Image (tube, rainbow, N blue to C red; front, side):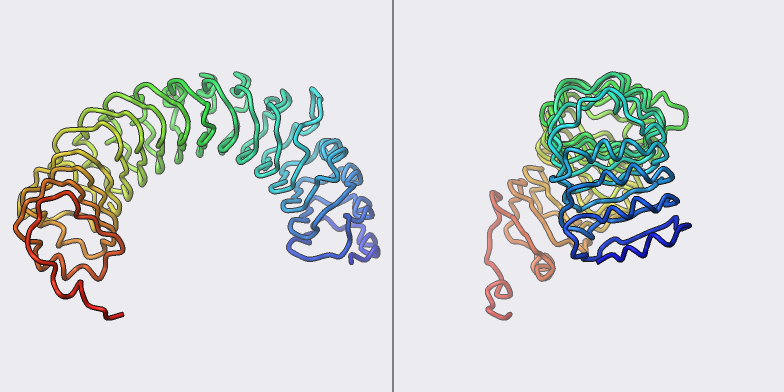
Length: 406
């Protein structure tokens, strides 16, 4: 148990009790007497609490973390207590099992708040209007809740945001163009809302920001449509771009080859068509390229891979590989998912240069060699997945694949 004598430390300004196992069934209210506290971390220290009204006495508090503390029984007073601390800069309530709805108020005192984490809290409501007045916010994380409704154009007021995660909610409608006001964004996650739709004009607007700082954009699992904006190529700091499971259509902008910092490009399960731009060969930092399950077509040549020295995963479908027989790739793949790509008629010799590869899928690749080369079977001990089906490969499976050795 926490000893009440703790209140004798009148000048205490930093208190971290996280990841303990206290036997009290509720937070001791005498903590409210520590009026000089600026930092209070109670995360993972209590199972369930009923009353936290004493928090409003901590008028100097700047940092509060109660993540993984069950606040369901405090649902009638948690919000009032917290919003009575105007000095608060960071509030972390991850996995707190909050009451489904925010109290119906039009104003919050949290005008100085810079970090707000309400992820995994069970909240089920529209975003209250006072959210859009937290103009000092730099990081907002409300992912994995059941927030619903449309996103207000007032989101453009939050001009200091650097990290915004509203993924895995029930938001719907289009993203307002005022998102283009958020010029300080570094990480944006809108994924898995399922009913967000329309074209992504806001990214085109963000591209006009001087010296854009965007490093990560995730749009997965929504109903976004239309073409990918050509302005994507202007995000020179972008390292992660994922837009899988949407309805994007049209050709891939060649400007994506200008993303000199890009490490991950994940765009499978869309309606993209046309060919893969040769400019992709400039992406020297690219590690993962996933564009399978689209309507892409056309030829892949050495130029598409010219500078891809970092490539580890390649997943494309239905493209025609026209490579010189003696071509040596600049990369070392771990995954090659090339379903329905035309690699044949000869077995692709370049695979023998891949010393780290563990997953190969060359289903329906137009290979009609009389036999799989011995060098390929000698690589088989490194494979965790291999699919050679729907080709016209002849010959015998070597003995090394039929052994019962462990």
